[in-house]
Length: 391
Ligand code: HEM
Image 1 (spheres, rainbow, N blue to C red):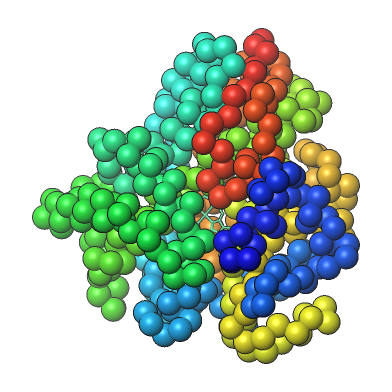
Image 2: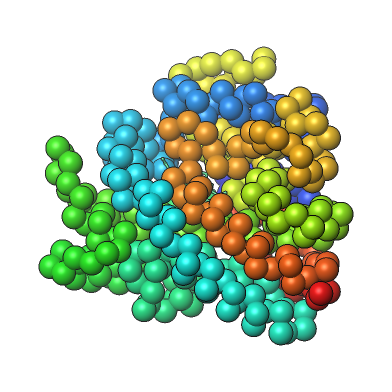
């Protein structure tokens, strides 16, 4: 079995089945389980949390080429300190709470337009009508490329995310090479322009930010473009899809939120817990170690099941219920530790605005295309027909 198939197998995508059944079985019977000769999956909250905290033992340098020494680890998400620290410091300087909050009016206006058009259609495609265009437009706007072609961004984004398994884990980037050429050419031109003519965009801030170690290199800037356009997009699309899915399964929760819109932030957090948009991340053991009696060897890679941790019966009371009264909801949907999601405030803002616009206008929602496996794969389904009963 290839690494990619193992990865999809855990997500239940092969059979289109619900991966949460596999996660539950793993938590009960094999919380640390072998997926292949050098690949493991970890399902309990306590272990997931511990792994995310301990970056020295559980490295984010997981790429085949970086492990074999063929290429240095580049970028931020699949890297460790000190390189990660420098890049994270830079992005946090550009991606400030003020910058995120300043997006609110634009997101509201765009979301209102999308929701209105979507609700005018019978059984609309939730992905095409709202879940995809909203996040891509928001990030394109922040990056200063809102005049670009959103359909092209979507195509690039899909190809990159669908090939992340083979490209990263097996070092096979044949599926993504052509797209990266197009992507890099487009953004290189933009970066060049911003060097001479700075503007108010996040990308311009990244081009001009300087630290003791100098500015970001061209490769680092292109990496940020990929990270922000792809990681930020596909996951926020997932949040919008998953919150509608949760409300279709828990109509009482929908009524509760409709009666008290102040519950929206709790609903967003519970949607993130219940159906984590980014089901798992990956780490590499930097030494031989033992976890729950299993011997993990140095350089073995570990699928860290965030989605399973979020349903752990030892941490969440009645984890299979979608509840708005969880108080402090310690879900791990945004990860934890040094790599915890930089875009979380933006994703929360977008998810909250989408629910605020949509919920007062609908009585119920039903998912018409039910493919639980595909819905939770990185990037989510390419389309999803839903039926809204309107107020
Ligand atoms: C609901 C939406 C989102 C979810 C569920 C999500 C989830 C995650 C998770 C789990 C990680 C940690 C990965 C790891 O530890 O290996 C992460 C990292 C990251 N996310 Fe998000 N994300 C979302 C939205 C966004 C958005 C909107 C942006 C930016 C526009 C973004 C940018 C990033 C970046 C830059 C990192 C890397 C952080 C680092 O390596 O230090 N994310 N995200």
